[in-house]
Image (cartoon, rainbow, N blue to C red; front, top):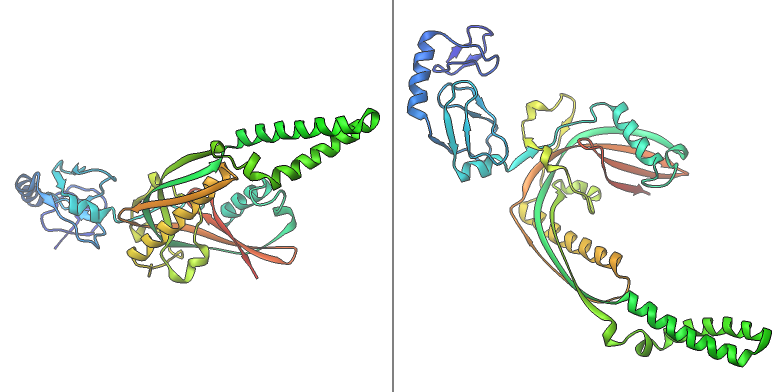
Length: 342
């Protein structure tokens, strides 16, 4: 091995530039590097599953491809490198999100702002006592899920029209029996009876076949499943990370003092959990859109998961004797979930 003539870093014998400081090396190395660059131009590189970094075959400089790239050029010597599909798949298998809320003060400020805006409860922050707050890089399996939910529900507009017509008829009848000033009282009684009759005679007024409609809800998710079995209580329900910001995982890019957790949940388990949770989310979305659902069925397909390390702040609060934990996305500042503690 050789050493950089400028900074002294150990470098490959045939390196033209220092991978650390970028300084160009001596003529011997340069000639050897040029020779290697010519021989290796356009060569395919297959990265192992545990790859941390690739190096240019021409000059030894580090290669940092962006997601989606299949052909890249070395920024130091210009060598073109083709990443075959298997190699690229392995590289993008493990990624991370950058830390935006760098300090406890920044995290606390973001948390108080969200609490004060009523995300959990209006002015909850003013009535709460802040406890400990800590951060860690937590692994999540991000599972692509394509979900399709078919359901039937009562057409709310049709039901309202039928109920109004029925109530009006009963109200008129009440008015006819009431007469004069008592007629107004009869109209009021008629409306109340109309509500009761509408409920008892749902088959006649509210359950007609013409008022049932079929609906389909199609959604695609990049569903996160916490990859640490002992942290399942912090599993997100319906939260999506900003994957556009993710970069290849490099532990040396994470500040010292921040704990990096290792996952112990298998890919198959993550896919099963993502499938189950997404179908539950689909059901809840359907009920939000239509309150009178008669039948519902969901099906989903899962793709290959990606392991994503996320900076997560855990903030402990106490509110009127009740303890809770806010789980905060340290990259976007979003609330992943809140956990009530007994």
